[in-house]
Figure 1 (tube, helix red, strand yellow):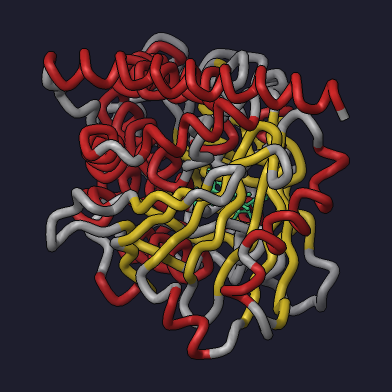
Figure 2 (cartoon, helix red, strand yellow):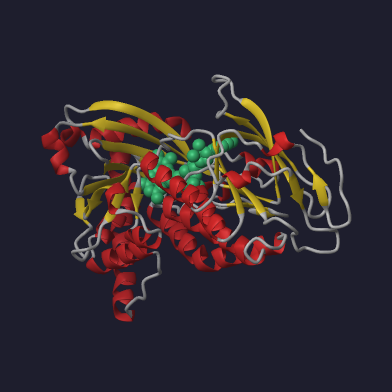
Length: 465
Ligand SMILES: Cc1cc2nc3c(=O)[nH]c(=O)nc-3n(C[C@H](O)[C@H](O)[C@H](O)COP(=O)(O)OP(=O)(O)OC[C@H]3O[C@@H](n4cnc5c(N)ncnc54)[C@H](O)[C@@H]3O)c2cc1C
């Protein structure tokens, strides 16, 4: 690591040339050829002779979207990704609003799901796409395709892309001093081992997913997590036809005590998976049960990939520390019940970057923790109710087989479907109709009451056996 050799009152300092020669950095050449770095002086937070410099670790949807927004907003942006062709284990379902809001080209959407089957513990299937309008659908994407698209768009906006594995960072001890990121660069021609490098920046965004090293570096604390297991299965063409625009969700203690099993259509195969928070060591057993439930429809299929990954259950205790912020899975933004995180990752990356652009007046000023807290305030105001509602739903409906049976029965109501799809597709809490809300409350009690009565009968029966 290079030490600073000169610092005068306005903070002009000499930096050794190799520090800024990032091999593999694919941004504008001006980023790579600087000999001098100028930072604001002690008494001013205006940056002299350069713009604010921000590093983002991880280029999933959170990192890609953050990088694009920063670069467009006049920030000198560095996006560090360990694996450029990373295919994140993921179902790949995205809400319709994401396509417009993030200006996604339609050709990266492999399938448009317009039908969804919710299948109860007793294998009662309810079709829940009935209220969709002709133009509405759930998009199915491949993560390697989406992530690459977002990264390339960030690069075109001016972000420097670094193929490197972030290892750790030195936290500054002085106000306004830089963060020093240590990473292994895979761009050099030295073979597979990579080369140790450092990068100095004013602020850091941790978009490095559920096992975030940035979160560790700032002592952000842990979160409870689910483990999700997924098999990609290539099924015969006639079977694939069935899943052309259909996704299935299975609930029941056999497939998961606290989550759901799924069959999602991908480009030329299906993804079959399940998850659990409470019984992680049984995940393979739940996967076998999910496959069993769908067996007739995936018969003759060949497993082409097996993958597993943690899914955060709630935000980390700390999401911002000084000039470091966490976004996406690193922050813990996945909704309970559904396990949805792609949209929230992209959105949080963008919102965090917007707060930095605004706070730094388009890169002209140093930012502080307060600027990053503005992102948190906006985020929590916008999404806290969504997370809370899904949390309650999970507690009420995922606690036993009878409750799950009731849940599927509820999904049969047109009003429930409309509210659910509107909230999912457009990410707004759909305004309710008071009469329908009342009926829904009565129906909910009815379903729960029936399923409870059913459970008591089942308990009596098993006591006699
Ligand atoms: C099996 C499964 C199925 C899912 N299905 C869905 C679904 O259908 N729909 C949905 O909305 N959500 C789904 N999710 C959740 C979704 O995948 C995540 O919420 C989403 O990927 C979060 O995006 P992110 O950008 O925050 O993090 P990630 O997508 O995890 O991206 C993190 C990036 O950081 C990189 N990285 C990590 N560490 C380092 C490091 N040290 N140095 C450099 N780079 C690093 C990684 O290579 C990766 O590219 C699913 C999750 C799982 C596990």
